[in-house]
Length: 415
Image (cartoon, rainbow, N blue to C red):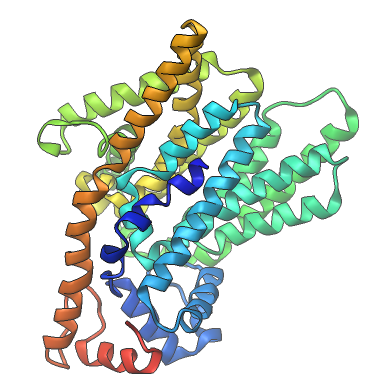
């Protein structure tokens, strides 16, 4: 129910989402697809990203939705709901109560700060990587409880590789799940051997996923002339990302500036929630939480390598919030539910209802304001720019010219 409730922003602001239009990287990807053909295009990096599975799904989606951007956004929201369902199933496997599952799902699924992840078609890559991460994790748990099923183990490894083939953060999936298996060893010898074997396989998946990125070492401009200043810049960016997200956009931070005050407020609250969640969690739940901490830290490290030169303000942009919310939500849910247990049963139930309503409104109500602004910015403004810009000139962020965009509109019936 909570997963479906998280679709309410799309339903309530239906007309605004129908205004959104192909934006920025969308144009460049469609242009390259049309110029190179699917097979060659899948083999080419997009920027610094090697994402052949996402490209294949993207190429399949455009004719499926007949060039409709709203149709593409619906695919994003469908993926979002699938992620929330997998997330709830994963939390259930670690013994979280239905109340804690619901609170965690609400924390991931409802925030307005997910607007870029759910209203920009290019961000489907990130959602798909998250979907395959959770799917691989659940398959791994099912394989272990199912007498070390070989088929489920193979499917888990394939899903981990699929995560890497959709988004750069996905390269962490194999290593992350491999380390998850190595966190604790049961007494059963067969299970220990299976865990070691699967850990090696999953870490091997990450090594395979990294191979297409070997060109970055010698050719990626941000890695050239590497020195202490660049390393410090990366570390500074990673620290800002980790401390500020996901609470920067959700808390009433003065002036909404990326400064020491914001770091103190958001960082202190995040540290308190993470510490409380770890302290009150069971031994089984700690395996989940430590793995999510590694994912959060790994995401910070990867982003810092590619975006440190944009300045620390870029560490809190909305397209980076989804992964941070995923990592934060179980800590928050476990800590809150443990706190409610200290109350008497009647008071605890009343407090839970008030918490759900209040938290849901805090996370979801800002959709009203931000969806209107984004619909104008990434909808009507883009349509006007495509129509009015001279054919040989760019119309904003894409490298694609307005003439090429109008040609692609005719070819793919983009609307």
